[in-house]
Length: 455
Image (cartoon, rainbow, N blue to C red; front, side):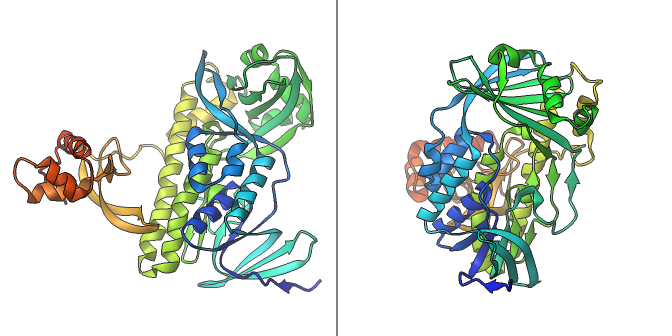
């Protein structure tokens, strides 16, 4: 069948239709840009946690339809390193319904969506992309684009060799029914061969996901049912919570791997979401990563398209943000795994305990010895610009505002003003309340920056 040139050509094409793609499209619309999203809806059911921060971000993007699915928060239970604790709650969403709701929110915001399978993203030169795809009926289409965002997850073709790829693991997930009723809960439990995460709702529907090495599946002759049952039998806290279980569906098997992709920023393209990096699923940051990435990537794209003189700054901001977050998540996972020492000799735990000693993390970069003013790229009015911030050991990414007061401006005013600051006058000058100025001034003094010349 001959390829049909799409009538809906766009400056920006986002490949993929998951949360990272849809949230980015919504963020771009809020900045006055019109992206075209090409991707297929999620085919496999799954449940996923949604943090309070992620819920706030959805509200900020106007995702009322998706947010309505969250409902009330569930309690979180953890059985790890011999301790059982209850932590702050999280929301639970079913991903097929959640993604569909996000798509409705995107359409309501004016985002153009095409239900299609991308076959190839052909890069013919700067600002010259050819997207070859098939629509839902299977008709070949071709769309030209000035800028492409790769958001097809782990399966997205690489633009360069990976910067880091951890050992592969497997996640085996099964739904169950139980007679237990009560408070909706999520739970985490470690065991000799890996760890488990699951859910229990008030109606007795439960899911149990088991993360382990691929060798555990091989030891069962590739029988996913037997591998899941053998591991489930070792979960004491999970059994105490769920009671006797009846399977309510087939087992889902998927590979998981911690990966940092290379070349996440091109002159006319960016990688976002799982196409840029994937973290250990222990972190539970999936939807928040998609949301925070969208809010940071949208001004990056706007800068690349509308202020090309700042292109190097914008691409550097995008790449550096990915590097910082990926390494931060990697260190967090390494620390959490290190706390579980009961099965240190087992293959799974030997592997994850070695995570903290990989060259990428060891030795960890040391923060500056004290506080200092530095220039770095930041988001301002929907663009990436270079501004002064205060970098401290506690805030290595920098602090620009405190209580609405811009710290560099306050510092400049202090340098030019009298020895004893006039708080009401500073408040008028900085456009803030006197109490906010007082707190910001106290913060600068605590870091010995109130009269220190900045580099």
